[in-house]
Amino acid sequence: MNNKMKRIIIGVVGLFIISFVIMTWFYPYSFVSVYKSYAFKPDPIVVDQYVNDLEEFKSSYQEDLDELTTESNYDLTIDRTQYLLPLFEQDWLVSKVPVKMSIDDLGEILFEVKNARKILLELIANEDYTQEQRHYLVNSIESLLSLEEEIVDIKTGIAESRKTLRIQFNNLHGSFLGNFMMFEIFYERSRKD
Image (cartoon, rainbow, N blue to C red):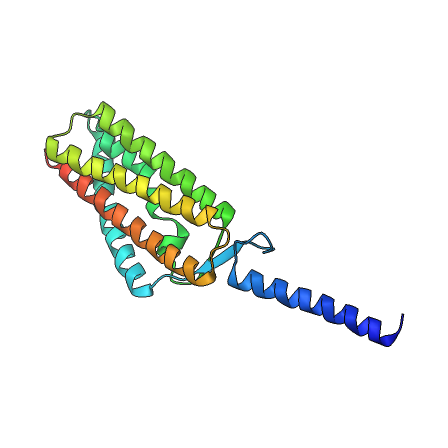
């Protein structure tokens, strides 16, 4: 093989590698991407506020949970809330540093959201709530369904650019925070009986 042929082969291979790297960078979940992950970095001010709200809720909830174990009255809402809290405490929601989000991570988040929806559906079927409480619970369930759709959109949008993913993950993060607020309102209203 002569030098000219070697340069052509090296040039073609180099061009292929550069194209591959560029595609992987700009389209992290594409079929050519090796790692299929995206580093999501939330707004630290939003995270601080969310973590404060979450901690306040958990503190108040812990008091209710302690009363539940000491009293003979059983409250399904209090009991099931302990299984919903991990949904709102996920690392990517409370972290101020970038968190790598792979397709598998999105699958796990989707699984958690579906489990939370099942728990809320169990509450609506088995508890006797006032019309106002039921309204807030239904809003929380609808919000979870929207979360499921957003997650599926990200998972199936394999040709999405890095810019689009940033927007989608920011929207998903905001939707999770909104869902927590919806659930918190429902929980507080259900405690006032």
